[in-house]
Length: 348
Ligand code: 1CP
Image (cartoon, rainbow, N blue to C red; front, top):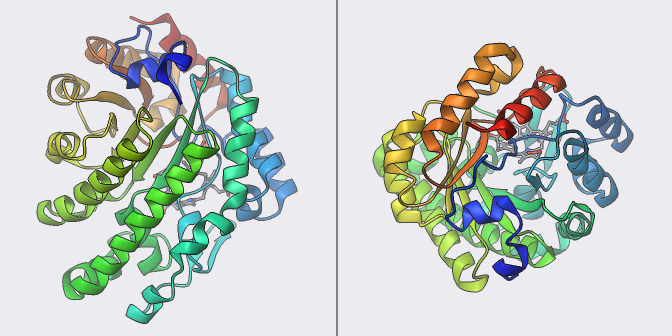
């Protein structure tokens, strides 16, 4: 990819460091259950993983929010848990229950994981990316993604969602060598997986570290910053010009060291980060993406409009991509999303 070929995409201009007004907009989880057409396609696919692994259907659900809202970026429809699945771990999505994995029990279970299998097992994902690269509008950028190693490791060790990450943290504190082995394997698998997405046509990649905020400082540095720095470095070396977005949700005051040390091209800020603080402390280092409260998108009305404008005012002096502070929730009225896009496109 050459940047000049895509210079008309506002999203890529911001990632290259430009301030663009009004800011480009896309929303985390922009495809999904809040859209009736998604629910219909999901029904047709059978299971959630079948949807992720059927390129025609995955392309279709990726395009659904673009047709309605003309976002500046499309994000590959998949899930962060396809990596464990690609490594050979059992993963299932049970309706209404969330993900269920066959939790890793011991070091042998780590050794049985198969990083070489990722490219074959996840071939349908790369096919979806290639299909999207052809199908999206010319001014729209294509984002590939993966879960960051810490967040993915929590699911692999807990066997699903968790409130306190007691099992994953017990490995981290109590079995440091085994935990380090799993994390090293995930760094390699994730890097390889993202490079394969880039080769299939992804123009940008985002790493979701949804549970970054659960870690104390020392562990945050070791298991959020270091792995993302390693992945970012290899992508910058091997696929120069492809920007990396990091989203270390809940990083708090460690956001600043996160951007300085990982050298990501853009950082996603969660709802709790004051935009004016991000303008001062993060924008000098990289582009900033965020950070409307997803629940304001449920509420809508003047509260949502005003908050969106406040965010744009605070971040207009530097590179800013408008987004939420976390993913869209299923009870979001689709017409509120349309209104938000109008407000953002009016600018400040
Ligand atoms: O029933 C359904 O249709 C499943 C709901 C759903 C959807 C629409 C899941 C299950 N995953 C997805 C798609 C998805 N997941 C995307 C692509 C869609 C888009 O952005 O437009 C992306 C980027 C993700 C990423 C993801 N999956 C994250 C990181 C981002 C975040 O929101 O924090 C995480 C933590 C997951 C795990 C996951 N996937 C699904 C569930 C129910 C969960 C568990 C969440 C939890 O533990 O709280």
